[in-house]
Image (cartoon, rainbow, N blue to C red; front, side, top):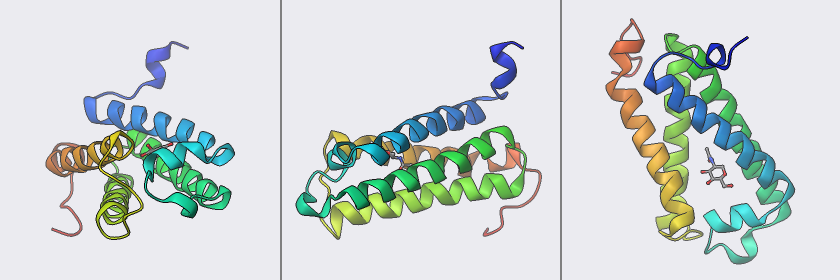
Length: 139
Ligand SMILES: *[C@@H]1O[C@H](CO)[C@@H](O)[C@H](O)[C@H]1NC(C)=O
């Protein structure tokens, strides 16, 4: 079986697969080592614990699974919308940790998750009609 058989058609599903692969690697890293989450939550200090890192890893893996399902089921309304929600959750979380709870700063560790979540959500919102043949649930 060729590698291309594993790669879904279209730019958005491929992007979601890349994001899912990165998140599962990060998820595994976070699970075993709290230094990776200390980079994202660079102002959290003592709030970074082995438990918080494992929970972040669990979220990372959960979001990876949702995004991989969406990549391979890009025309499925439920998979597509759940994936959009996963980006909304990530955005609300990262923005509130930065500006409300102040556990993170606008540094390199925070900018990339913010860019990934906001650009992916925007792309999925704009392209909804070309992948899903039904109206968006909350429009
Ligand atoms: C997964 O963890 C990494 C840090 O190890 C972080 O940069 C990335 O944004 C996380 N992914 C999600 C979806 O939260």
